[in-house]
Image (cartoon, rainbow, N blue to C red; front, side):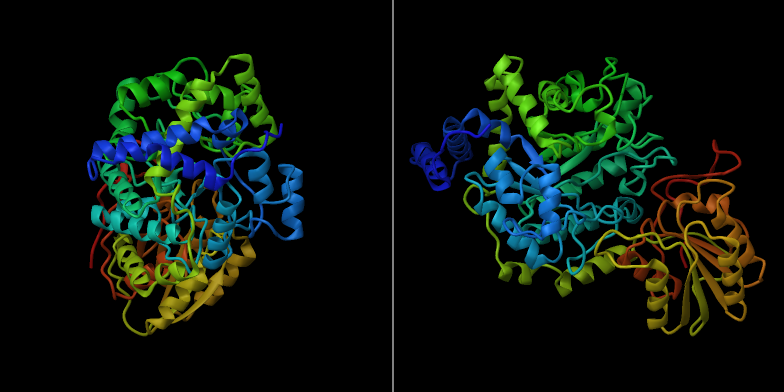
Length: 598
């Protein structure tokens, strides 16, 4: 499968630049001349590529290791087992991939200097600079942790409701990603979360109001792309009303065409209007848009008919990860990338078996099922994006740039200020704000936080309350506390002035977190409940003195919660989704826009 020797990176990019110079001379500074220059340069690059290189440019692949050439032995073994190469440099040499995606679990994101070095090593290994991507949504989905600046996730920003803050968060995040050599972020989430039981989107969404979500999506597109980082609106045509997770199943969206246009489409239309660089597909069935039984990722009526032709989008379309079961149920791993390209996709993200996927596309081209012209259409979009974002000329980063940008005092202060405005007070009988110097017990769920984002949340919250003048003790009881854990919490609560309980997705009447809250309330000590993920928990809990929602459990959200509890900051968040009654789900307990103050 190896292609014949090709010109060096300098020769490829240099010849392309020289070939296009004539169009720029004579009309400097004009938009039309610049666009013509870019087109000529991109065409020159494509003309010097083999079909193998062209196909490789369509793939964005994972790779294990902190280094492009010398990862740890365990990462070498993982790469050999899953990809058939030892490191990122070999991956690029063998498959000519156009992009690499970073994951914390793949050991790509240890610290900012290491990330920058990995990015530089990847770029040095390729004749054509790569789009280096990650899922840095913030909140529940965070790949690059501290000391990078961390913000709350989408629903928290939706609770704050500030377009300016959403843009600022994206601008700070984008600047820091760019400093580390990450030039494509799979954010913002443009899904409108109208289903409280949604297991995969939830707090990743800005909320349930299409208009509000659209405005925040547009703001984040401007924020990211203003720093030179490619923003990616996801998951088209809208993953917000699913009761199943496309990582494991193929969800079905039952919206009518009219409902889709009213509920799901507005944020994507806003992203297109804002000049979004890329849009990610969803592995979901939407029969009203395509009744073929194919998921949206493989649907020409959805991706070409609606996204490209009806909505007028001609940017890069990237699939969601091709290892997810939602796209693998009907076709083999060799056919999925071919069908995605035929549907209108440009980038093929993280197939489970790259060799199988790569060979599948090559076979389709050789058989005539896919024409080389069709491959070139996607190449033009991808390379034009790389040119527009400056990658073809300036793909490298420096440690100095990292130190000047990542985790600065100003960025961290902005994150704290923005997060303070997200905490939502749902109920309060006068217990909050807490009087000074209280004896407090902080108990409850301690879900694992995304890598590098801190935790455990009960310990972080207790420490933050103590730093604000209280005496707070932390006791983790988990997301499913047994009777021994409940008894220990009740014993610890006696003699305190208040108990703060962190709850995490209380979804059923039999949830053990309900038993914990009831037992603590029975002590007579005031109980303050904080929903640290989905805000719906309060509907199943009773006997509490106050209830808040933070929409996240990373350190930045826990510190903000402490400031609100202590009265240092007034709660300013408003529910971006409705909390329905547990006993009567057709009625709202707290509607969209609900939020108390002090």
